[in-house]
Image (cartoon, rainbow, N blue to C red; front, top):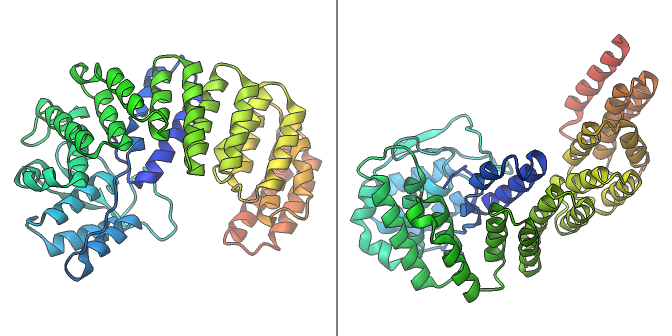
Length: 434
């Protein structure tokens, strides 16, 4: 299963969001197999971060570093305290670190990359600077700690995840072929499901079955039905089934199960992700009104994700309901102040893709002029209005919007003030040169 350097929770959200975007952007038929391949439902995996008392609180320190994305520092702690990897608790943490905190997939062998994220810095799937490369014999080490793995459910799950990774890989791995890795993953996941009897364990097992060879993948459907029989109201299993139905080209069932997942999920962000997935499938089936409504609900649950508002407005534009798109956009921006500024540019592009520059200007001008709106958003709105007016060939109107944006930027008390002034003045020069 792919590892990106994101935390477990970030991976869950990112994968569903990206999938929903891909469905709407590239099409249900055109890229079904590609989108499905990206849906390795390892996205739904949650590895419990149980705290165990170690010597001088060392385990707590390592766990805390991992939660904060300080992966290189966590690696340093582990290798400094147990360089020979004799302590099962340290090995478990190193395995967790390698699978869930690494910024790169090992290409051929057990070599991982770690980096410390700055406080507040978003996780990135791109390889950053300053990566600490670290190799360790995972399979050989796990073989030495087989008894500890068997007695620790968290360790069992992590070992299963590792063997699932090798099973799905096309590369050659040291001392471990794919057939052996698949068999080990199957055995460990089965044990985890039997001993833990939790829906999360079932999702992990299903993810493995899906990505493995036909010998295993043919068991995915009966295993999914068994899991749903035992846990019919589990939000993660319902979402897995929604994604499964999507792979089978059953959009109605996919939408229905995603909506059920949202209803059952107490986590509002996760519920919003399920609604977004349902909305993207509705969009692909050209049910734009339903798609817009589902996206609107997603915005209500989690306004911090700019893709939801962009999806809602795009669906309304495709439904040729420009007036409602303007109304919904204005109401959302005023009601949900937590909507991030980046949403403005995403929405401008949605209008631009349909050559609706004039409609965009009409929709957002009242927002830009609203003194109650966040100052940074007003600046970005004027910037976007100016860009739309340039596309329309209206240089005078573009210049006027830009002057208002520059005036507001000079009042801005934000880290982006100087860079925005540079950008707005560059756009002004572009207008004047034409």
